[in-house]
Length: 207
Picture (tube, helix red, strand yellow):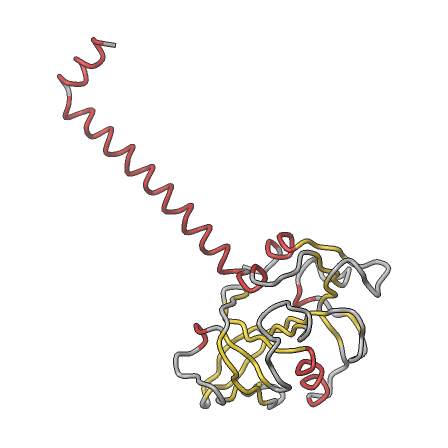
């Protein structure tokens, strides 16, 4: 051991360089790991914020909410969630968002105070949106009214949250059949439902 220390001291320039290189490799690995964790959280942060642990999806959805289509009626007794990518216009400019429709009385997500047609949006969508402003769905011209802000991102894009009441009204006005993306909890109207935990659902988010 003593000879080793003497050798390191005699060739301190050489060993100093080895120490610096090792330190930089460790720092780079730490930064990359942190970046990967941050990107993973950003990819599914909207799901992280939901107060639910189990979801029932269409068995053909491959675990992706935007590919899950469950036929329901607007007055279904089960708590449901719907997720759909939209292109909305803000003052004539197109923006890509993901719509999350949640049960108003289920304490799942930031929608308990919303009325029909209202949404809350992730601040990364725009700095110029305020209460009472509108988001207009490009495909159907359905008008969503801003009622507040709530953090949430899905597939590295901003989320807008609304209620199931607004969701079914949106489908009706755009002349689409009523459906939802998932039933929340352990009960399901489907005998062959794909049961997923919150973590499994997050890991299945595209991106």
